[in-house]
Length: 342
Image (cartoon, rainbow, N blue to C red; front, side, top):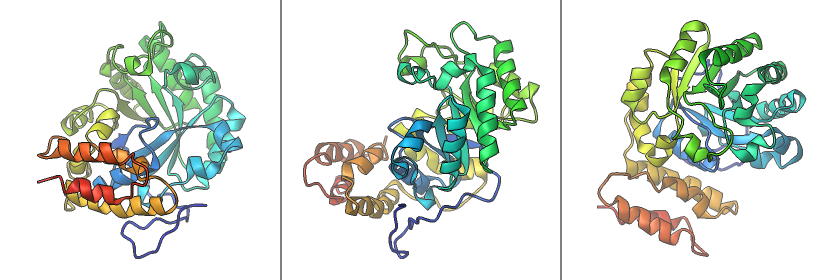
């Protein structure tokens, strides 16, 4: 059952599924990142930016079909626009998982064809699927037939020695045939053995021109670029070649950089809240989760980097890091940490 709290609370959380009616604006999005883009992080990010598209962590289709669905799928209405990333390789399972997930109100369902982790490869999930474009196409077709929201694909420019332009072109061509209208391309190839996921984000070179070329070859498809982008100026630079940019680690390690995104990229000149205001607005959410039995540390770990580069940031972070894990800690620890700031 989705969380419910009194309507008087700021940033009210509801249990009524509702996806956005407008077409999704993917000019800027935050990448799906395991253990990072949890519902707690997404709630915090939405306090910083109104328009950036947020993605969940990857959820394996079988977890939805056989596990605790609310645990994997429940989210707060304030997170919209929000997309769910699914992992799997069986068209029937993915279609059913997508159908169930749509009922929770997600604005998009994304298929993971980009993760290089050994662990997910064993389940035939992620980048390893690039070697089987026909199977991926069947998965996308089945998912699209089961939902009314967009079905998208996140992939790489290639895998191992299958990394030339023709390989990527044929893959995208099959996705187009399947009816996929939006693809996110991580502009590195994935090396499927011998490298950790972290190394796969750093060692294979970025080849942005490959994604640019795909956009030129498929002008009617929406192409989103991912990989190595760290500033809003970088985003603007790439926007001359592609339709949007997906940010990964920078959005987590320095979340406040998203504060200017609404103005710079979306033309929304609403007042930008200060870091302290964001932290104070996050507190009622932490208190609500605490009342439901969730230890504050699970929510507060996402706010550790909010004051990155600001005076007192180290004291703020240290106070939270040293105290939020202690038995009996309450959400008050956030206010105590804020008191460390000048």
